[in-house]
Each structure stands twice: as structure tokens, then as C-alpha cells.
Image (cartoon, rainbow, N blue to C red; front, side, top):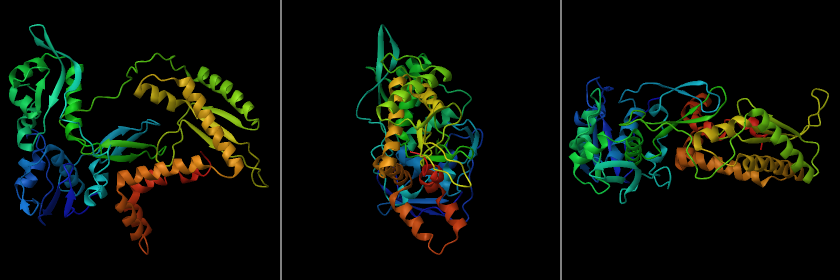
Length: 427
């Protein structure tokens, strides 16, 4: 959903940029043969959007690439740059989701100058060399590291032009535009270009991942809430980038672990572990379930590994129900597939033990673990949406229209309240 362009924003380098859009500024879209991001550059160059910092006008070409990409997202959020809807698959239930990435970008941290999060606002350290898969430099030489440098929009212009062509031709100009200072011991851009042109896909993808990490803070994302299961799906914003992020895949952990079994043997192992753990606590009245379907999610939209539902004595309208602990097989499978092998048997044991602790705490009338988990979810909401934005939107609801409040503040509910009814019974 578009909204008015903020008058001033903090950008990733920390500077405060004042923005002013013409009243008749038009929404710009890039032509098929135009250089990458030319619509954003033209929005500034045409005067449709003016920028000032420290009281002086600034040109788009002088922007650090991190700042430029953040401003691209903010201009798109304000409806000044065209944005296509993207289709993604829910990571939890595989449902199709249609989403406008920048249209849902949380602006609070930029507007309220809260870009200090050590994870969300960090970019690649450019002061050191970074390891990459081996790249041959010829004459029995090989590079195993790459060193990148800061890049401005002006520096990156040759890369933007090259990426608009049907295929990327690696030249010395493109190497300089990517900010590649050194490839191992090699510093000559033309020779680096030839080495990269012959490099393996693994090595090239490693370098492009480092490039993206250098110029796109992790904060540049928005949340697509799955309409079917309520899971949180993070989507890059802006979605169009110089290179496609490397697809997640199973990565070796350096340790040897037993293969994650299929559902039935996994469920049987879970029942054995549950019986032993319940016996230790003399908790024989608990029902134990291993669920093979779509996992439930917590208040923050994260798929659960396990869940606890207290029992109910029942009444004339509903039967009694035993306390129940559920383990979600598909969450274990997703972690294995996305992050690589882990000690699933130990994790399964810990998950059942954790939910059993919730049961014992419930019986005691106090569950500090539940309070900690809710605090973590609320803390995540504040990190993503911005502390002042959460408070500000809450204040605005007093006497306001409930529907308007939901439209303006739906990310808060995505992260904090989406599973309230479930959460009262789980964990």
C-alpha cells in the first residue's frame, strides 16, 4: 500500500536524508532495455524527488549503494516507482502467496532514525578479505579470497548497464563496478574479469552473495503472512537486485549425524522418548502426538517444533480433554533441508522435554518460559517495525477507526498477535 513520501529518513550509512517529491511526480517504471534501476536514478535526476543532507543538495550518483537501495525501497513504498507483485510459496504449508515487497516495507526505523540493530542494519565488513571457493588465476596460481570496496551509484553504473543486456559480459569495468579490489593476490581488473569468467558457478555465486551482503542491509525486507497457515515469510524489498540470492540448500555442518528418518520411524522414536520423559515426571495423563501435516505457528509466525495444550475438565457442552504435547515433523524436515544436518534425536528429546516443562509450569500456575517466549516475539516486532512506530500506531487507535488501524498496523499483528487464540492454549 502506497503512502506519502517521508520528509526525512535515516539511511544505512547513518546520514539523514531529507526528501521532497513534486506534487505531479509520476510513477516511474524501467524500460526493457534500460539500465538496471534507471527508473530510480531518473526519479532523482529529473527533479521529481529532491534530496538534501546537512543542508546541501545531494546527487543520486554520489550515494553509497547501500543508501541508494534503501531509498529505492522507500520511493517504491511511496508509490513513486512501479512494483510488480511477486509470487512465493509459503515456507510452512507451500501455499501460493502474492505480495508487494516494498508495499509492505516497515518505514518506522528509517523515519524514526532507529537503524542501530546489530543484525538487521549490518552489512558485509569491507575491511577484510572473505573466503570463496577456489578460482584459478593461471600459472598454477589460485585465489581463495576476495576483497570488496564501498561502491557509489556512479561507480556501479557500468554494472547496471551490463546487467540490462541479455547476458552479463565480465569486463574490467564490471569488476570495478562490483567493487572487487582483489581476487586472491590479483589486483588487475581485466585479469580478475577473465578469472571470474572461467570460474565455477559455486565461486561466482559466492562472490555475488558477498556483493549483496555488502550493499543490502538485512532490514530491507517485508513480511508476507500466509493466509492459510499464518506463517511469516520474509521477502526481499526491493525484490529486484543486481543478482539473485543463492537458493537455500542443505549445507554440511562439519559433523556427522544420522539421517533424518521418514515420518513413521520419526514418530515411533518420538513416542519412545515421550514415554521415558513422562515417566520421569510421573506425567502419565498427557497425550502425545507427532503431527505430519502443516505445523502450527507461534505469535510471530514461526513454525513450531512442538506445542503444548493444557487439558480441560469439560462441561455439559464439551467433553473433557487430556493435556496434549505435539511435535511437528515437517518443521524438523524443513530445518534439515534448509540449514543442513543436525542431531535430530537430541533436538526431538529437547523439544518434548521443553513442552513437558510447559505442562509442569501450567500445573504450578506460573510459566516463566511462556513469558520469555512472548517477550522475544514482541522484541522481534520492535526490531522490525521500530519502537516508536509501534507506540505511535497504538496511540493513534484511540478514537480512531478500527478498520483503518488494522490497514495501517497489520505488520504488528502479523508479528505479535496473529496466533493469539492458539497461543492461549499452546506453549
